[in-house]
Amino acid sequence: MVKKYAHVTSCQVKVTTKPWERMKFEDKAHAHSFYREGKETRWTEAVVTKTNPPSAVGLTTVINSGFYDLEVLKTTNSSFVDFWRDELATLPDMPDRMLSTKVLCQWKYLPQTLESLQAVDFNAVYAGAKRNTLDAFANDPRAWVHASVQTTLYIMADRILNDFADVDDVYYALPNIHYFPFDLSKFGLKNLQSDAEVYMPIADPSGFITATISRPAKGKF
Image 1: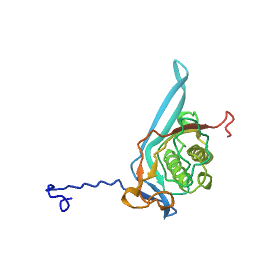
Image 2 (image 1 turned 60 degrees about the horizontal axis):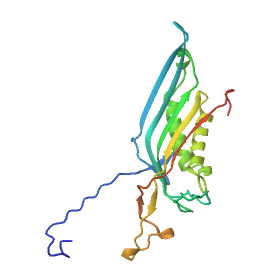
Image 3 (image 1 turned 90 degrees about the vertical axis):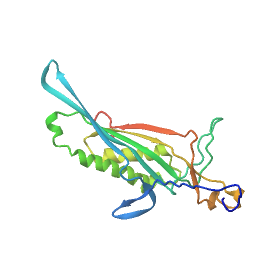
Image 4 (image 1 turned 180 degrees about the horizontal axis):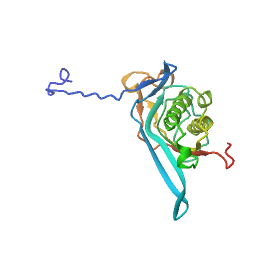
């Protein structure tokens, strides 16, 4: 800028970056899946209810726990094509795409007494919920080609319910964060379809996928 234009005396360029870390499974870095380590927030809440008020002899406790703002991204092994279209659809077919979301996951424990809750390993459930979320996103083949975000959500919740009998239901919110190839043809560069290397996050309205996966009353699903 300062060399090309005589009337420009100074030019300042500022670059900011938000680092992504590769997911690791069995101490091996994943080829194409990333997350922002330490950005998520963990929380829990408990509701204690008298079963025979006003007496406090019998108490039932319901605990909800979860985490939010776990940002994940994978650069391949995701496509979305041949979906239903109407006059409001704007998303093109994507035979291969970046998939990114900011995960909110919460789970409700089966109602228990305060005494029985002492045996629940809450840290193990949290670690398992996060592990299943990341592993399903990156490695589960059911969440790869032609799988919608809704399918990926169900797989994550299904795995948590299978692993932890104390969990009654799992809720996820997975907003779509779209990254599309930036058209560089005006600069004489190819960056579309199979030539794409530079992607830009899109601020346009996108899908916001939520669901709660629950056990039936008999404790099986």
